[in-house]
Image 1 (cartoon, helix red, strand yellow):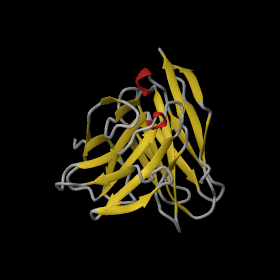
Image 2 (tube, each protein chain N blue to C red):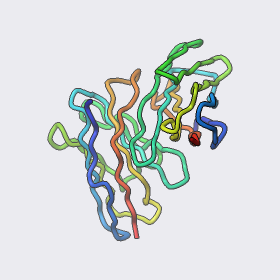
Image 3 (cartoon, helix red, strand yellow):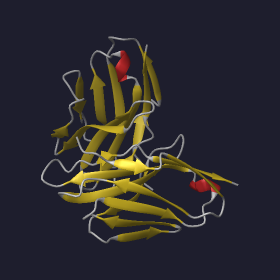
Length: 113
Length: 113
């Protein structure tokens, strides 16, 4: 069964450093998403990406965040200057369309120290 | 911010018991309701996407119903097994806006052998 893969599975970074989280969505899916879950809290929407551009973003997705699909397969989330409160599990997901469920990756646990 | 509530927060049942839990969401501008199963150390797995009032979906021993007029969905598990132990997430998508689903906090189910 097709999978969404994410790397790395765990990243520890110092406050103020930049991190790039990587995702390979399912190849024939058209919609891509990033979500995060801070420990003990809800899964929160960050951004959706369609047709090579951001289609929606949440209030969380401020100027320190950016997404790219640099080569038609990878989908990356960059956090420019990490803060302690960015520590969370970050999930990438893809879907065939808005009427379909998401296929999630296994997540990247980001720890900012 | 959409209010998507799940209850109970956690549930312990014995193997063989049938169980159910609830997802509540706004009753206006309904578009879709997703259910996901999230096992520890794995990624959330799509169970159902429900779009019509009165929808009933079934997958093995798991089924779900939808009432969009009153804003709730029930997930039922018949004859719970230890492998059903997981967090069950619902996510509500509203029309007239972004259609991006908002997740509830989840119901954590533990099935004791």
